[in-house]
Length: 72
Image 1: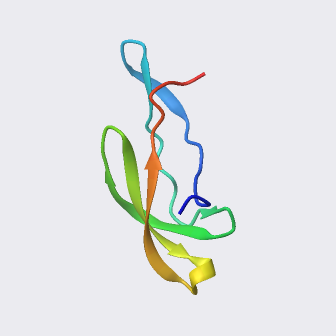
Image 2: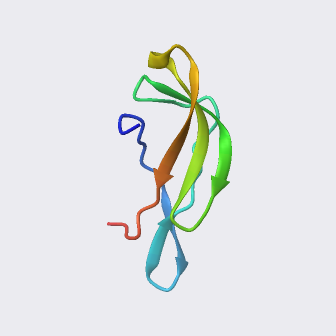
Image 3: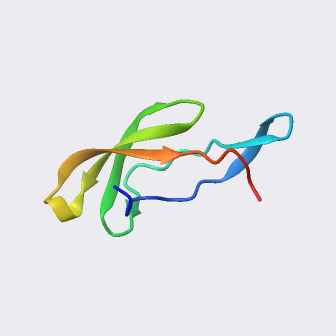
């Protein structure tokens, strides 16, 4: 679902490595296509959300947010 990406805030976790730690908020609409329902799981490299795809008639999909290993 490449049209359903969002940028998250970052904060320092260990040493000089920066990782995204802000989860998307429920009911957020991304790219006028995917509405976030809830967080399904989160790990060191990203988070997976249950989302409703508006363009697919409200079908539920899994949406992955990849965290950035570095921040500018």
